[in-house]
Length: 111
Image (tube, rainbow, N blue to C red):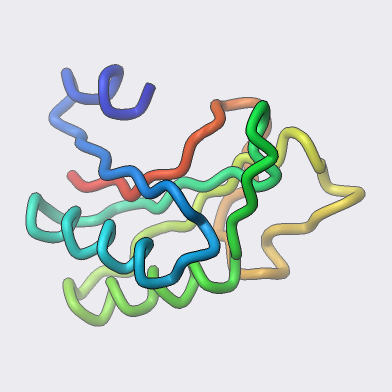
């Protein structure tokens, strides 16, 4: 959704498959930085349909690393639809935004 829908607005996305693999997330962030400014890292954990997990605190570390490299720390946005605020409070783990019912994907967004 992100790559196709936002492409018309000159916004790109670089996905990552494993939200527990810090190296993979760092590589996606590096790839996104080569394409433009990384504005947001979007995650969902527990992912709808796949039950995939993402380490929110690790994504915060990658966002901070990206910020040091590009001079602007990307927002960490979290789709908290499945767990909701009772079972998981993503802000306490490093997310900047907690969203509900957007989609089921993780990506690094560059503008």
